[in-house]
Length: 91
Image (cartoon, rainbow, N blue to C red; front, side):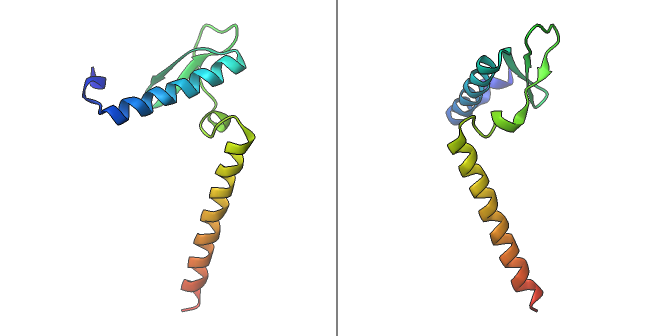
């Protein structure tokens, strides 16, 4: 019942997350993704107990370009943090 009070943006984000998880599950043979206790679960092939969906590729996209931009963003953030620490260390 808590889904009733979600805004349109929250519902759209939830729907896109579900679609992304469902797409990953279809590619890897998993079925019936669902969200519970702040984690995504699905049934692996030939399983009767749902398992948490692996996050590594699922959350960052399954294409190489999406992974590249994610890693580039992380590298940029590390460079900025390193620069800030260098400036602070000079004092």
